[in-house]
Image (cartoon, rainbow over all chains, first blue to last red; front, side, top):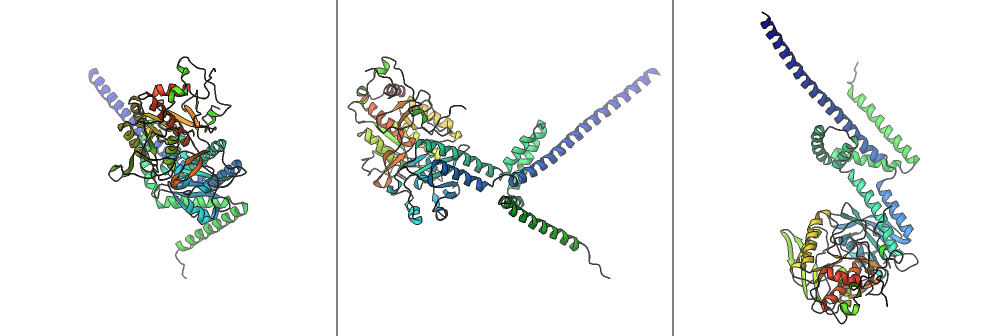
Length: 297
Length: 271
């Protein structure tokens, strides 16, 4: 009689333990899922914040920052004109990103094929170069010079590098008061070129959603390994699909426009806000009235 | 702040350090090293944008190869070609002015676009080694990290096969290859004008300083320009090495480096 009871108890105990184990596993799975979802929610929020804040909140627009860098370099080194070119990999040309100086407006409309003139050569060799009697050089982009009616005497050109690639060149024209740029000018200009390159790639990076996701993941930290790698994969897939996504691109463009406008000045910012507020209110009102069936008596 | 390589700061008067001679190694004289040599019989490859053979400062090119990236891989042409921009002609003109009878070979790897640059450059260097050139002037480099290993291997091979590589340093805070390797002679600019004046840097990776500031150089279109760049310092050393090899054929890289160091202008000489 006692043995049977004991066996019965033992069985019950075994079953109970089995149930507990199953439930523990279930609880663990639910915990993980909860943590995943919380993580996903955090990530979504961080992503949204990073994109909009990063775009709208930065103190200076990307274009203006580049301009400031080139302006400062031009003033510090005492040159009369300057240009910053970026390489367009598709067309294999240098395009003006910034042009300063008397003929800036005219010169901006040209693109320079890689390897053409001093700027093109520096882009191809990746070596800084200066020339002091450029007007006597028959090949220095003579066609562009002739078209704008300005042939520089001295030229200083340095490459812009980001990661290990040449992404553009920074060129100064006509050193004031002396016929040629000095070696220390070359060094100083290289420092400005580094600033410009970092600024350019920062703005490009956040267009590339995949690296933005990477940055955000890093900043969240403390994510358990197994979860992390599953999410990594999921997000990279999401990122590559989203970066083709037209809506995302439009939103980013919109954020940039708002940013540009508000940094023009306080009045412009207020006008922009008033405009957007007004438009949003109109849309809200319209959707409310449109949703209700007309009441006919 | 850690000392960072400036454009040519290691060769300014303030930065230059005097070298103490190690006798009898540093008893070498310029007369012994290259006196009477014109670089005759020395094969010099200029791996660059091409050379305008007709330019008066160049006075003839002995051989050509132009390499480009085609749809099916690299394409090689040995037809005479001209210089796309003037850069290669400038280097050739400097070399010719120092070693008037050396044999110049134009290895054209710089074209009007950037694609495949690293691969084309490597192919040009490989060609020069395969063709048993004595010296190669490399007034260009690649900054792409993925090419680190390939150029290191090529530079080692060149060194062991007695193909001396003279490479212009980049000196921007970006490593360039092969200028950084110990198996090449790396050159940056100093501010003097005297063509045979060069300095040795006690703190490599840039080893030698040669004229590279406001140098009057041959350019495309038959003319000349006054240019500044490490690109124009390297060929001065290339020319000097060609003269050395013309007088003492078969020297190894390390032997040539000892000679150059001994004859550097910052070596203390007791007279």
